[in-house]
Amino acid sequence: MAAPVRVHPPHGTVIACENGRGRYGLDILAGRHVLSADEPEEAGGEDSGPSPYELLSAALASCTAMTLRMYANRKGWELGRIHVAVRHEKIHASDCADCETREGRVDVFERVIEIEGALDEERRRRLLVIADKCPVHRTLTGEVRIRTRLAGG
Image (cartoon, rainbow, N blue to C red; front, side, top):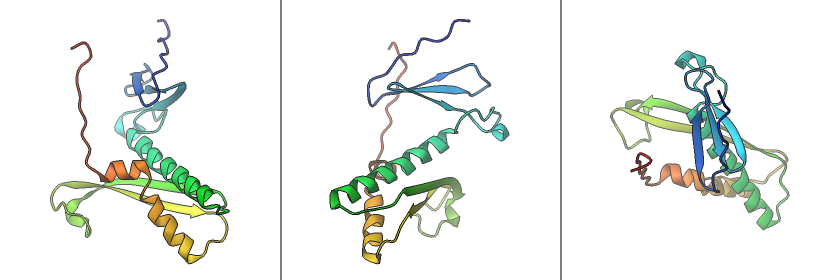
């Protein structure tokens, strides 16, 4: 079988294509970059790449780190390396004390930010506020519409 043609989508467009490796394996084309995605073995996949929720968590983690770095650069703050860990889970709404939803399940992203080096308390508080201004955070907590159509129609 011939290898699939690699189309470089324009900036802002991402294409996910089944790659024939396992039941759920995908190649993801983002501009000139190729990523992989798959489901973990316990979900029937080959674990050949991050799961969709891991990719979503990666978007939040990377956007947070970049946003903090841009802010610090604009302020002239010397920061050490920034590490952002994000964990996603689905919990029962009834187990969530600070959720508006009371039934069904709720997506919870836990984000932990570590910045190497000493920071005074005022800068720590400010960086927490700025973390919530990262564009992916705003997308995830804002109103979202997904419009879907089949190609060719």
